View 1: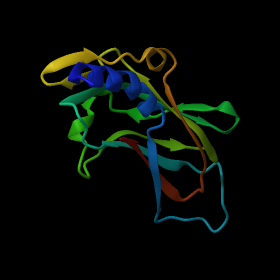
View 2: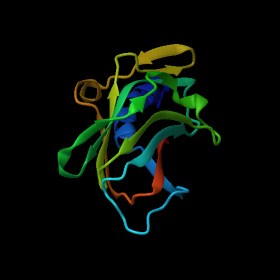
View 3: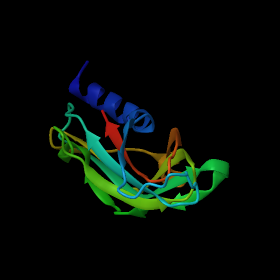
View 4: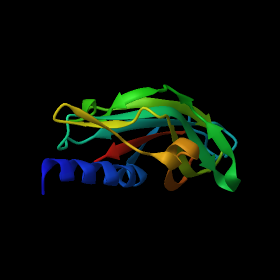
Length: 161
């Protein structure tokens, strides 16, 4: 298989990898915990990104917004730091915070990343557009189905291996 064929294969499978990129969810206790759970109490929620090295020079992902779908279909747009992120800057234990917010739901069903049009893969100095049509229209949807406990801050790490 030639390098160009390998590159085209990477470009075709990268959106699929992004769709299943939800790598790990970690929790830490907040200092102020209630003896009785209160699902209406805001729950801190943080979304971070990381990656692993790959056979390319750069992978640019244009993050525009991050939205959480909670129980019953309620949507919350998190405070997002929009921008074009090079996933290869997020390797070897590096990550970046892309969105934060307070959720008042007791369950996260889905995380939706709205992507812009400036997504690309660079291989040997040549940039190839990364087509993500559904992610630009309705968002890259990651199924989570995570129950939330009040008084706990949640950090979600999206791992783009």
